[in-house]
Structures are given as C-alpha cells and as structure tokens.
Image 1 (cartoon, rainbow, N blue to C red):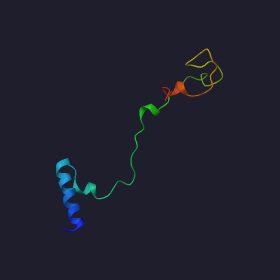
Image 2 (cartoon, rainbow, N blue to C red):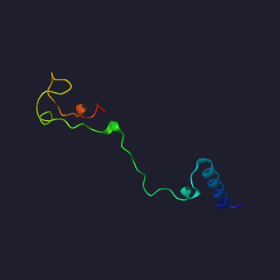
Image 3 (cartoon, helix red, strand yellow):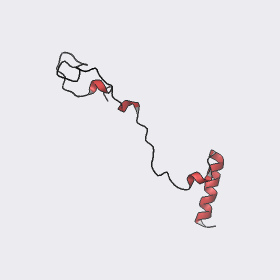
Image 4 (cartoon, rainbow, N blue to C red):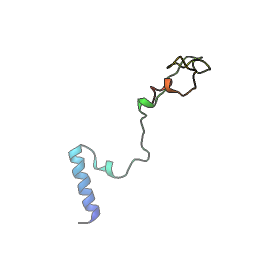
Length: 74
C-alpha cells in the first residue's frame, strides 16, 4: 500500500465519521476567515468627549485620550 492510498483511506474514514466529504481534505482553504472578537470593538462616544475635558471614567482628572472608555478597557 502506498502513502497516497493510505491517505485516501484515512480521509474516507474521517469523512464517514465526521459527516464531511473526503474532498474537503484535499487542499487547505486559500484564505482563513477571521472573525473579530467582541472585546476588540470600540464604542462611538458623543462629540466633545474626545476633545479636551474631564475623563469619562474618572472625572477628577483630565482626559489623556487613552481610549479606555471606548473599549471596555481592553
């Protein structure tokens, strides 16, 4: 039995168990689709908060535009 025949048998066995067609293992996808995680999103704040003024999170200090208030602090 050659390597190619063995690979074909393994692909077919995996396809039978997983419900995936054997052709799905023939080649890897050209480009992976990346789904961004919700923690990487940012909020849109009302105009004026981005300018000079007190910090939205800690109003006793001036805003230094760190972005903490726009992204759950991540």
